[in-house]
Figure (spheres, rainbow, N blue to C red):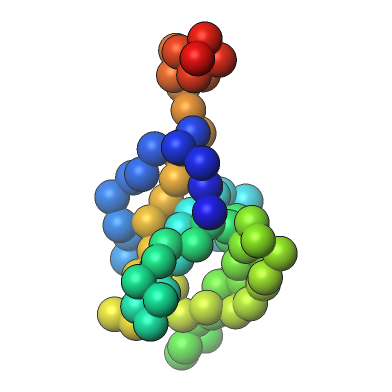
Length: 88
């Protein structure tokens, strides 16, 4: 899970090649949790899959952007946000 250092961006439909390397969270409805990771590969085709390396060490091909595999991008903190966090 991500400590409060990242800001959520609106949920997206389907990642593209330009999104490789970006941080995201994937929603797991059975656990009612969002798990953070990084998008590292895309397998295109009729049923696209997206490889996620999760921060907790898990990894897997996910069908991101489908009703059962919701996700949202995470945006790194700005310099101003980092300074205010560092001062705590």
